[in-house]
Image (cartoon, rainbow, N blue to C red; front, side, top):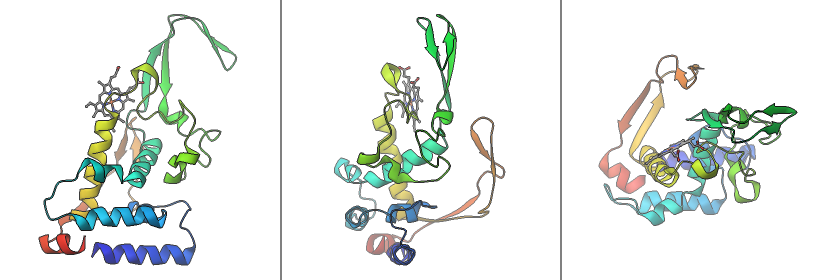
Length: 209
Ligand code: HEM
């Protein structure tokens, strides 16, 4: 079933000639990459027996999935703000921040700065390709500098494993596709983002996923 969906999506992308353009959903995003990378995703999914664990090597092949995750965290930054205290007078943008003042950093505003991220409201995981990587201190979902999140590699591992399982072991449909959300300040869906999730049959997963 998944393979069928992948081929269907890939054909549609070819027809629209959008392979490298902005993408709207996860599967379309996963497919809108170089054939080489698509091959890798399929290879990982098909080579596994049911319940077989992912290896470190498998995770290192999921480069595009991590770009998708980074783009999600750019747009919906999980930790949207953090605090610092100035150790000396600092001039920034024509203002003096006096020594000892507390500074509130808004990662989510940096992520929406169109001088750093062109068309910031557009979902485009190709921003994180090697040749296009944002400059230092621009993508700050995990903070930056000496107090940067030490859990980044663990978070990456969990994210990649979860996404892989979600798309290969389950079928899932959103029950209300146009559901809106508010920031309070974290994103909160109006109806809790209801989805119907079903486990794919064991045989279907091992033969076709
Ligand atoms: C998607 C998952 C995660 C995100 C987005 C995230 C984000 C962040 C951010 C923005 C900071 C503040 C960095 C700064 O002030 O510059 C932080 C700090 C921290 N994170 Fe994470 N984190 C994640 C997962 C984890 C995990 C899995 C662990 C541990 C296993 C972890 C442990 C920590 C610790 C201990 C700090 C404090 C570091 C310090 O103050 O020196 N985080 N994280």
